[in-house]
Each structure stands twice: as C-alpha cells, then as structure tokens.
Image (cartoon, rainbow, N blue to C red):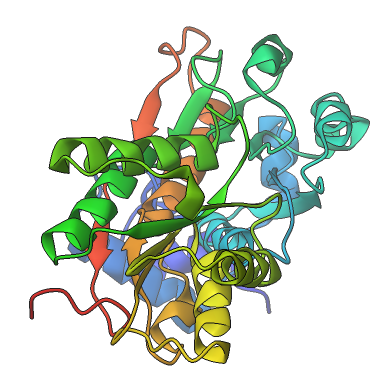
Length: 338
C-alpha cells in the first residue's frame, strides 16, 4: 500500500503537522526532528500528493526559468543548480530559452505559458535598462543578470565591477603590465561586458597603467569561437601583451587555444584569467585561473527568494538587490605568487 502522511508521522513519532512542515521546508524545526522525519520518508518511500496540495493552495507547484541559451555553459550550469534546488523544495522547473532576443524576452513576460507556473526566474540578455517598466508583471519574478537595474522585482546578481577589478589587480600585482582584454562589447555600459570592462579600467587607473584600446578584443557573443577569433586578431595585429583577461571562461578558453596555436605558451609567455569558474575551467590544459562569481549562491538564492514571494503575505517587503560574494581561483594559467 502507498505510504501516507499518517504513516510517516507514526514512524517518526511526531505530529502530522511536523511532517508537513519538514516536507514544505518550514523553518524552526530541530535538526534531529527533521532528520528523523526524512529517514521515515525514505524508509516508507513516501511521496507527497502534489496534485491535492496544489489544488488546496491554488498553486501549480512549478516555476519557470528563462535564460538566453543553454549552449552557453554558464547558463547550463545555472539551470542545473536551479532545478536541483527547486526539486529539493518539491517544485518543478520549466525552462525557456529566449536566444537573448529582446522581442522574445518581452513576449515571454506576457506569455500564457506562465499561467502553468507560480513565478519566474528571468535572465534577460536582449532587454536593457529602457525596458525596466516591462518588469511590472502580475506574478512573482526574480531578475538575474546585469541588463536591468532598479526594477520592481527582486534582483539576484554578481559583483561584476569589483570582481573584474580584483582579477586585473591580481595580474598587475603579479608583474603583468600589458593585459589584453577579450570579450568587450562596443559601446556597452550596462551589462556584463560593460561592467567588467569598467572594473578592468579602474584597476589599471589605480595602478597608474594607461588603458590601451589596441589590446581590447571586441566580440558579439561569448562563445569559445569568439574568444579564439578575437585573440587571433590581436596576434595578427602584432600588439604586445603579457596577460589576457577573458570576460568569461569560454572566451578565455578560446583565447588560450589561439595562443597555443600561435606558439605562445601559457603561462610562460602569457598569463590567462577567466570569469565564471565553469566546471570545465579546472580540466583545461593548463587549468584556468578564474573568478568564481558565486553562481551556486545566485541560483539557490533566486529559488529561495522566488518561493518566498510566492508564499509570502499580501504586504510583501520592497524588492531587494541581492549581491553574491566572489573569489579568485588560482590555477595553472596564471599561477600568481605561489
């Protein structure tokens, strides 16, 4: 016979209400009690009746996640963490790819498909600050990324300027003076590229090193091919540099490949630093020094914040800007002072 809530409560020697609180991840439950209930659930193979629970609550038990492109490793890893965290909390995730296209992103915000979910975690790429009013929606939403700030929703993001500044400082303190940058977007101010370029320039100014646009590689997308092509162009022009800062890891890995093809050794001739700390960064040859921008925290906090909004009171607190901590992960491509 299928195990019931009563069976779990009886085996764990707790009330039905306590079992329900554990299943719904309510706070203020003693760790020992939570562990006992979870053991009873596992032993009995109990599965909550989500359909009945959702009918009672008026919720679907699903949330949506909209990202530009799962072919980009950062968004694939982000989606995996969001799905795992939501699953831990008994929620299903429906994933949408927008292609980073502004019109598709705007269409998604008013799509009837969202009625199948209780809220949205939204990472736009095509939309910009001028679209901030479009985030005035009738359902709970958490914003990710760096395209729109000061909007009407909770916003979970990374410290792009600070992290890029510290990555550049690291290279400068290690004796690098001609630091090429790969992945800039022409004219961008708000957005990952613009903010990371700002941090790079601030570190140069701080160290008294002149900014040189000749060693800045401009791209459109942030794929490996773009990083490799941008680096090949810098090499073709014969500009002098002793380090590379890739504005994400895939750009840095593409640039590193182009350097190796040209006979430039990493790190003997050129140091390379990336940004994102993708899983593949630790397995490249050489392994990639990079910025860990707090992706795990961002994904888990986005889920937690959205679910709190879904379950929250009618008089909810004002939208929050939640910023992740970051750290520099030293590996073989830029070994630092070790």
